[in-house]
Image (tube, rainbow, N blue to C red; front, side, top):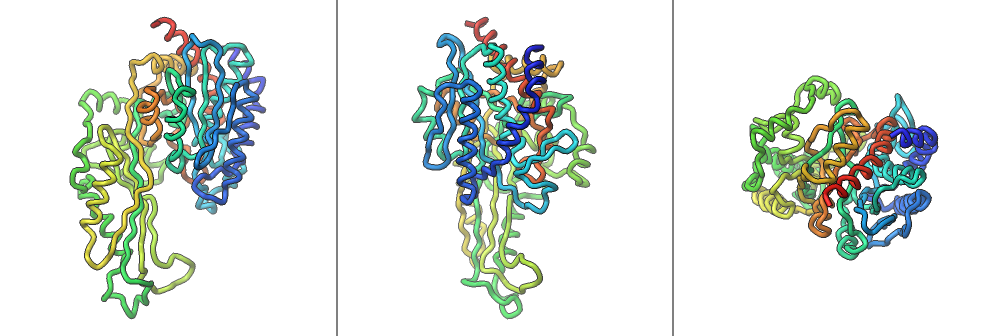
Amino acid sequence: MQAIKQYIETHKQRLLDELFELLRFPSVSADPKYKADVLNAADYVAKKLTDAGADKVEVCQTAGYPIVYGEKIIDGGLPTVLVYGHYDVQPADPLELWLTPPFEPTIRDGKIYARGACDDKGQFYMHVKAFELMMQTDTLPCNIKFMIEGEEEVGSNNLGIFVKANKERLKADVVLISDTSMISMEHPSLETGLRGLSYLEVEVTGPNRDLHSGVYGGAVANPATVLAKMIASLHDEDNHIAIPGFYADVLELTESERAELNAAPYDEEEYKKDLDIAETWGEKGYTTFERTGTRPTLEVNGIWGGYIGEGAKTVLPSKASAKISMRLVPNQTSEKITQLFTDHFLKIAPKYVKVKVTPHHGGEPVVTPTDSIAYKAAQKAIAEAFGKQPIPTRGGGSIPIVALFEAELGLKTVLMGFGLDSDALHSPNEKYDIFNYYKGIETIPLFHKYFAELTADFS
């Protein structure tokens, strides 16, 4: 531990400067105008992997954005850790809500503000720098492989193709991911599961053109009004999702599992204060931890139609649309839930409008084993770095490729994230604490150390 801390202290400024260089790339995979920036970010990651000591570093082309691969095999008889991360980021909109430009990283109160600071550039880059640390101090105890992609924020459409075509190259004993969060630095935690995702777009069409709301209002159905009513009907008075069959496959927690989950530190008033809300909202009969980690949800991510510019324009819009995401839990599947939603939404559409449902992408829920060698190694690493045992939690987000790795590579995943729920992921003013960044670089080598030791003990 002393050697680890000494290395970080000696190279502290450079470790931060390099992350800032990475954050300056506006690598927004969802917007084609940033294509060159996404590609430049991939090249930067490849260069830094090479500089850190990786062999066979390659920017692997796909039908979309490339996957950066690198490895260091020190002994075929030692275990291998496959590190996954992504260098693409969410769009920064709305730009006017950022206090400082999203791609000009800025430090305020010990926090790095930039798009991608936490999700996932700051977190995956900790692994690159931890690898460098182990190489420079001659303490790498196992083999390591890196697979850093550029399409996570748009559904990882080409990652599955790459994984299926490179099973031999990607052979490993465990996948290690830092793209999740902890409860806090005072209460370190390890996520033991993630929700799945069904993401789609709906469009409601009424008349063949925008109409004068005075001439036609009251005689022709307004698609925006109809869409609002249809969406409102998707939850009942207890905030359950009102789609027939939606909960049919949901795996309910046992009472002991609920008790363990709710034993984690939680301050309802602090939660509301942080979000500036008067009350929490959700499915009746469940706590906030249960609602955000173990229950399925349906959320409107965006809704639009008609005139939204400056001033007034009295129109009855021809179309109205919305983007909707549903978070899924074991044993739900994205394919089934997408179909249930589609069938229901088309069924409830009134005759005076036409409705179209377009699926975008999805992913499956996962639960990671807490009795594995890799999980125990993560526990020991966090306990040593933080001075206390990590609390097991369930993550509310989705990382669809976790299920992919298990299905195609037969590998379980350890979710060792260092972000915080308050880091404003996908929102303006995304941040990542400098302390968390350095703490991750400090903790990751300990994971490799204990994973190698525990694997040897059980072999």
